[in-house]
Amino acid sequence: LAGTLSKPAGSPDAKGRYPAVIMVAGSGPTDRDETVAGIPIFGQLAGMLADAGFVVVRYDKRGVGQSGGRSESATLADYADDVQAVRRFLAERKDVDDRRIAVFGHSQGTAVALIAASRDKQVAAVVLAGGASVPGADLVLEQQLAVLAASTFTDEEKASRIALQRQVQAAVLGTGDWKDVPADVRRQADTPWFRSFLAFDPAELMGNVRQPILILQGDRDTLVPPQHADRLGELARTRKKVPAERVKVVKLPGLNHLLVPAEGGEARADAGNKGRSVSADAGAAAVEFLRQWMPARK
Image 1 (cartoon, rainbow, N blue to C red):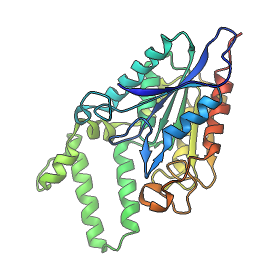
Image 2: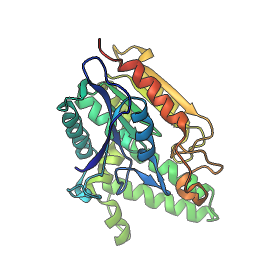
Image 3: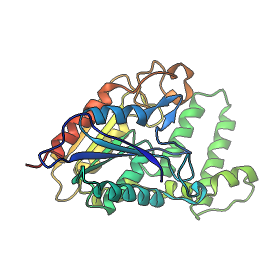
């Protein structure tokens, strides 16, 4: 893995060490800055977090940029392995407090962050930004229904597309077949990553995540609508032997899925959002939460 480490301008704790944050990007061939629609989401968030006193690592995903590996064969679990590798790297640094390392996942990176946190008790806190609260298979159908509802397709065409999507997902998960599915559609869908994403259910994993959790959500997000934040919060608060106050849900007014102000909803389909910046409110909410749950040790 190759990435960028941002160091704070402020002073460390009494032992000369800083808290740290690992940034975990969403789906697709995402670089270390998580650049989407021309917006370097993680590049900008890393600056905010570093200014607030955190060491921040953001990295190119497997098979992207300067990182090795093969993205076409990687699963969500493999990407979680990468997060743990970065956590171990940070823990070995003399300027990082190995008891104050958090994970910040965005979009589908929230699933990876949850897997990593469930495995690695050395992760001190988790931030989930724009994360889904339902299995991947349900989210894909929800998103396709929303796109079709806004389209000019006939009801028959819409029904046909949804039926194909359901068939493809069943085939990927091994509960259906590929009969009559176009070859190009199968090539695109029949991958280890998509299979792992469709099968991922945050409700099944949440009970194994013991860390404090911050859920960030733009209230103009149309890719993962705001109700997902509410349900994620409910899932996190019902964890056994984890106090409810270790969960915080923050909805950010006027922000879309990319955490930028947008007059339109989804920035990835809105060229007018190019050149906009991640809202300082998103960075401030993360900083406040992480300072609360990763205070400097005396």
